[in-house]
Length: 240
Length: 240
Image 1 (cartoon, each protein chain N blue to C red):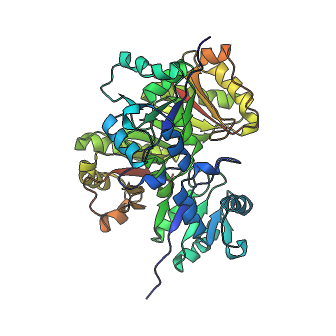
Image 2 (cartoon, one colour):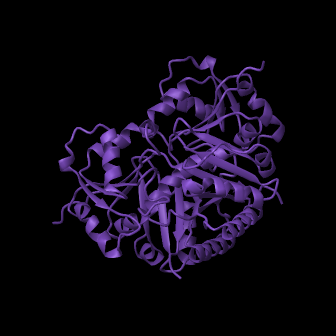
């Protein structure tokens, strides 16, 4: 008889230093019961686990790395501990695994292997930004990163604006933090004056900044310096 | 000099009975410091607050109701306590306020009135379902409810399937719980055999059920009875 399979727990991580209070206690409890982890980066994962004050020695913990460079044939062996009956944890660099990170690949494989997948509650910058935006939360789309080059970016922003207007759908995206300022400039030059533009930066951190205004308001009242601060941007055009 | 304005805290609620452990402790602490609430239904809000074991008497707490039937002119007075310097809490029936509920209207008004909006971490069935689906979490769209009538539903499901294939975008939606079974039947009849179909029901509850499989797998292995169980559905077609 085959041993019962372990579960794959999807364990959210804080969005930055000093934000461990945003994790529910049950997540930490489950985390402390696990010996096998799949993480985007083992170093960050160890750092996070250390912050949760585990009782176990690190020598008992096993880490596999799953990132953009992971080849398809490397995925299957990562789930071997679960097939052998051990519960496992999937961790992202920050926030919820499987959302805006490469974790979904291993979750899909877990379903194929009939391993139970258990998502746990924790911080997601995308969801927090959407809640805080005041934009439509009954219809929204997340697009990840927009193109970095200015003409391409402007074209995509225009497309998102049209999409939002047509479907009353909030458009959500991220930018590499060192590009935030250039991104905001392009957005304010490109979008219509009455389109709503939302910014959510440093979510759950002491420096958290959240605001939604029409583009023409932002032009008169520029946002604070967001250089190198993790940020989510949102567009909404609730007009015919 | 005007008094400093209060903040509007966006307070997540559990997704069902007995799931209060999914809330981080800091959310409960902030909740216990508030006297003014805006809730989809005051009765549910009181029930939830009672479960958090508050020290205060309920007679000190003030509730405004914000739901689908709330008229635009009723919104502004709801924020008066914040303008008078009191922190306020916005609560949904279940999960995160402002997402798949009418709360976004008051958040938008808060931004207009320059009231600080503070989103707090907690359970969202949409996000948990997405994490657990193993589908693309780098591009996804939430559409709320699909049309109830079968021919309209089938047409929309087909559109979502095409959208997913074209943009590698996960499509997420909900159904009224008593319609789940009919919805699943229509979906399995309408979608292509190799399209991935995900089901996430009773999230965070002891009866939680999560699975993603191709449509032809589901046809051979039907899901459990989901009648009247809150569920999220997902479609993904990661093929050219």
